[in-house]
Every structure is written in structure tokens, then in C-alpha cells.
Image (cartoon, rainbow, N blue to C red; front, side):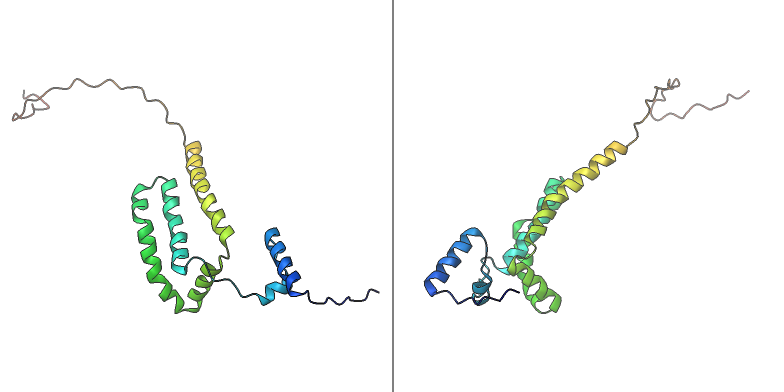
Length: 162
């Protein structure tokens, strides 16, 4: 049976050096992580939402929808997001969206979606083309002799009077 070993806290200098090394390695010490405050977001919530919305414009551009791209401009996305954030803050579900935007949670999922959407659109178009049945070649039909009728004249009767 093993005895639990007691871990004494590190002196301040060693703790700072350990945190610096772990930061370089991309790891976070659970001891120091609990005591450090969450960093303030570098980008505002409105800017995060505008960036997320601009993905719609990029997807439309990749799909060749130029009129749609003209609607989803960065200025339109920014204007909408500035108006949307105060509304989102009023509701519990909206606060979850704001938290998502502020913490950067789900960034990997958004990156995956922004990469996958153009692939899915291109694949769907390719599948439609592959499944399209080739049209059989039509032989040109001989045209019946057409009688040119000068303008302002009546068409000759179909049957001749006897």
C-alpha cells in the first residue's frame, strides 16, 4: 500500500519559472491555473460575432453566389453584431452564446465547419453532375416547307374552294 506524499507549495520564484515553462510547453499547471484569473478577451463579443457571421460570406463566395456575397459584407456583419450583442445579453440562451464568443470555446468546430462547408457544396454539385443522365443525341428532323406569308396578308385557306 502506497502512502500519499505531501506536496509542499513551491517558492514563488520556482512557481513563476514552472508556470513560464509550462506556458512554453502549452500545458497549464492545475495548481496555478486555479489561482490565476481568466484572461480578458482580446477581441470583443461583437467582433467575435461579426467574424463568425463573415463565414457565411466566405462560404457563399466559395459557392459562387456573388449576390449573396454582396449582402454579407464585413460592415454588415459588424453592424448586425453590434446591435445583436445587447439583445443576446438579455436572455439566458443569449448569454451562453456570448460566453461561447468570449471564451473562444468551439473555435475548432467553427474552423472545421468553415473548411467542410465548401467541400460539401462542391461534392453535392459533383454528385449531381455524375448522376445526370446523358441526353441522347437528337437527329435533326427535316423541316416542312414553310410558306412565307408577307406581312399584312391573310394566310391562304387550308382547303381550296371547289
